[in-house]
Structure formats: C-alpha cells, structure tokens
Image 1 (cartoon, rainbow, N blue to C red):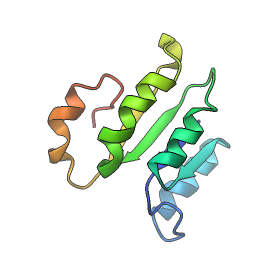
Image 2: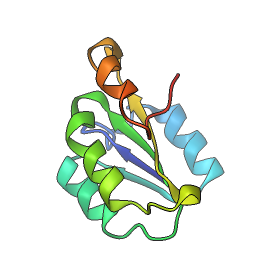
Image 3: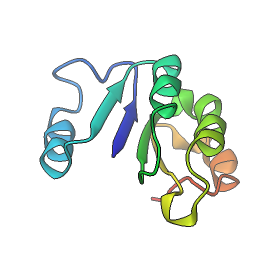
Image 4: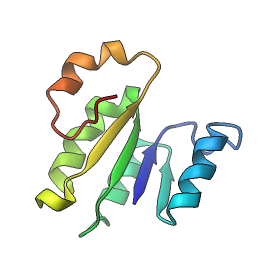
Length: 103
C-alpha cells in the first residue's frame, strides 16, 4: 500500500507519470491532500506494509503519527520517503527517524 500526502497531489498535471507508475504496480494507492486526511488513513491501516510519500513541509508533523499508529511489527514497519526539493532543511531531522528512507 502507498499513501501519498501532498496538498497538490489531486491536480491531474502534478506528478502524472509517477502516479501512473504507482497505479500500475499497486491497486492500493491512497492520495491525500492534508495531514488530517492522512491521519484518517492511518486509522484504517492494519496488518499491511505501507510505503509513505510525504511532502516535505508536512514531514515533521505527520511522521511521529505514522510511527505511533502503524504496526510495530518488524515486517510491517512503515517506510517513509520525503518528497521535497529542499531536503537539506530536513536532512538532520530525517537522519534521526528510523522509518525515513535514504536516497
């Protein structure tokens, strides 16, 4: 399952190729445009491996919720990718978060 949090993700022209590719590889792509909507999705994630794509400006707010609300089982630990042009502003914080992917 992929949950993508980005306030602009609902726009057709935004990341069109990425959205098409993700839809090709999974039927479980949830696109949400706010932290509150992402939290609502978190309440319904049980016993599933979840990959999160998070807009950089929302990372510090939602990542603690992801860690707390998604299964603590080692095989179900969430994986978070921060989708941000200015990742340098988050790099020190991100290194302290076990669930955030490098790359």
